[in-house]
Length: 72
Image (cartoon, rainbow, N blue to C red; front, side):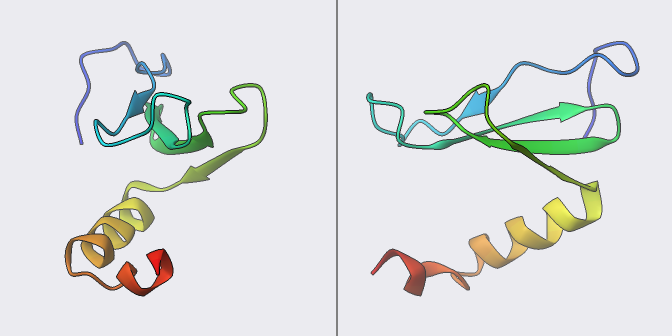
């Protein structure tokens, strides 16, 4: 993942297009070398910080349907 932002400057928070209008989703951004994840309903709450490798592993699992059973 690359960014045009100066080193250490966080990118804007991103939210999936499929998220609800009420904010029921998670948001992600790049901050330095970390990928940060937060609950969009609680923007001042805790933030999960992942390495690019950890985030890539999660994306691979999501892309392959590994977590689909959690939505049922």
